[in-house]
Image 1: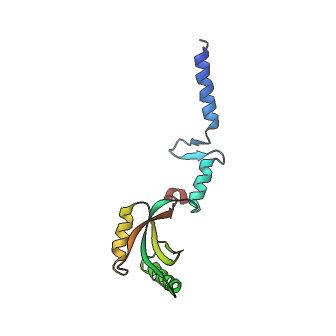
Image 2: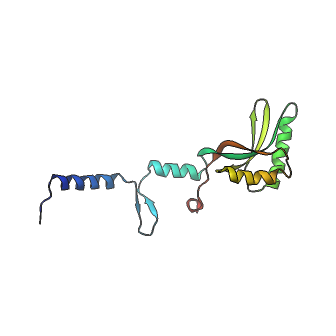
Image 3: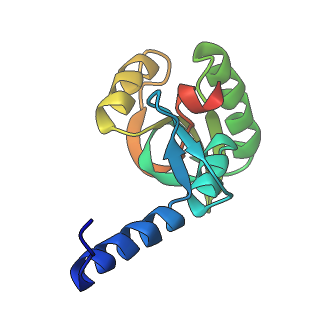
Length: 142
């Protein structure tokens, strides 16, 4: 048996150190198993709970200021929720306007497709860049 030189021991020690710091391992079936409550696991939990936002796009279907604009925005929100069920609808206030926006789209093209449909009911609809909520991939939710 041949003795390891300095370089061999160094690589062996580095390999052990890297393995000791890895908070996950493969189970041999192509799945990752988390071994401890790491930053990665915490991030996955935040995504599952809908607590992570990123740059994305929404479709703005309504914007109005003045007397009664809040109640009209809430009415539009209810209409939009019914017409586009399954999509999130947001009412925001950016002085002096109440705005109604639909969707959490990662690409402009996804938002543009909805915008075309929305213009049937709300002709002044357009795509806006906004912070959107990141959704967990189906594999994480199941």
